[in-house]
Image (cartoon, rainbow, N blue to C red; front, side, top):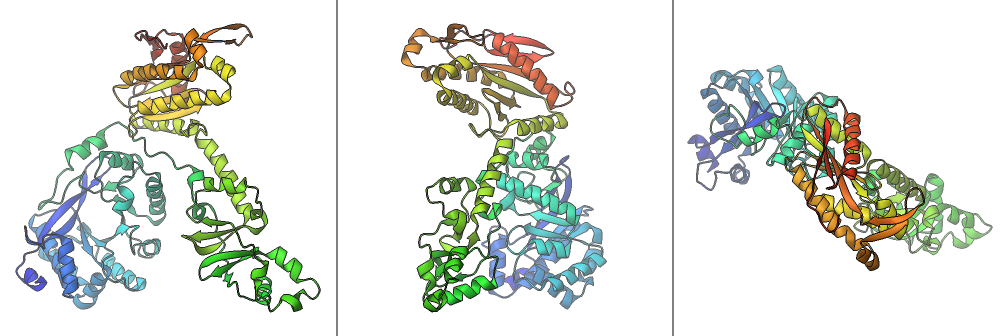
Length: 592
């Protein structure tokens, strides 16, 4: 069947654009293959599955290469073209057809070598890396460039990147799709950007399908992108990417991005160096254990394993202190070491978050400080971890978390707020900074205590979350009862008014019934004078930031502070600052 498709020239070439993410221009196209239209073999997956079953994968790949070059040449295209070849097919092509095979095809169809980028896929059995490197070197001598496809999946790994030094690396769609909502994926893309600088490669994000993902990738500074949002595979090349994608790239709106992963959400394998320590059987003799400790003086403990499952942990110091006593070697040397084991050791899964270990650190059983932990993967032994490592990791994670997020609301703190404002200013975006503050909060906190005061602050965070668009607006917690919402939404004023109305209504429930009946509380003011305070309410000072009006985030913050002060003085609770403070009146509500 594959032989007939090739001979009857039933393979079809289609081309998908690779766009520049800075200006939306088409940078190149990737050539893709299709079988007979409307047939069961139209999809490339079906084609290659059949070729695999008929042992004709190389013949199919060679025919695909000839088909796409012929189609590209007949269109008299001058643009850059990515063509796919598996490592095995590339090497065999060089061996059986010679390095000039591709050059002859290019000349036949009026194409130049510099137009071609050979995209090395992960299909098939992977050859020796040196053999592949030699084939890549031959391509470069002919004037062609090389790309690594689907980086991060399967066999396309960091060593291959380092050895082959491709001109282009395509990020696998797994790390691209939903990147706007997944902090781990966003961090991975940033890491790949740093690697690309080291190795001198350009990056292409594959599988871009949503506006949110495209906006984030643009804001991260990624050079190129590819996916259905930019353009679907078509029989002819595209002169520009699709309108929806172009509008995103030209928009001044800045991506808020996924919430930064807190360091205390990192797991053990990310935070700690797991000690790859050998284990022993529970039936191992004490003299074997003593020999192991003497041979490896760095071991603080040894795990006892039933197969791969830990059943005990022996502390080095405790065992050797006893074993070195007079006659202990003679008495215990030929007996099982299980006698000396802690038979209920601390087991921690490798994917435990650091914050999940707090319960262990504060428990009554403090043997972990001397014995350490056994690290497991789904209950199977991986290695050991010392107690002091865990204490240090938890301490560091708390410090990091405190630097970047508020521990009460877990919202971004001052550093992320400042960074987001600076990004908006650098982009030339227009936006609104709304500064949220509570009226009469001190009297409430003094009257009811910090516990209920924290509940009031969490209420502000909850209400604010309900009135922002996660991928468009940025919510941060400055500290205390001060919050910031950075709006790119044109309906920001309506959102603020609804936020004030909802908070003022819900805050009343935090007062005692008697105080609710009175309409407030009696408490000392800042001068120590007892007076009546109404219900706690929300005020918002809003700063309209237009292009060129503010130099930096500090200037914006100063204006926001002025707007907040004006809002606290206003009857309605909302004041807009734009060169002059303009109060906005609210309809009177019983909770204000």
